[in-house]
Image (tube, rainbow, N blue to C red; front, side, top):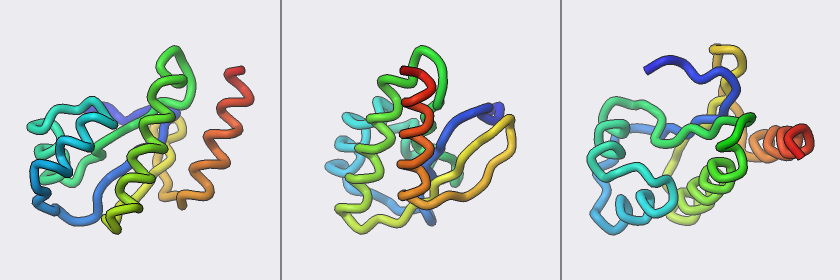
Length: 108
């Protein structure tokens, strides 16, 4: 999978084996199928990546925020990364929100 250029990705910490109800909720939020989610979790890959610019921004960023809120509500640990020009850096949830606000200002 090629590295995103300008995006925020969410990767679960560890390789939890979720019950179907959790995977179904993640599917409804992220629109990734259960097999895709299981594969990403096992491989330690992002379960969701939100491009910050472009035509999908308006739909993917709310999904990212909902995924963060859902996982936080369940106490499931995860890591966020900001991807800029193919390089990644770990970020916090508050910084993610600042980045999204800045991206919203530029795309609006």
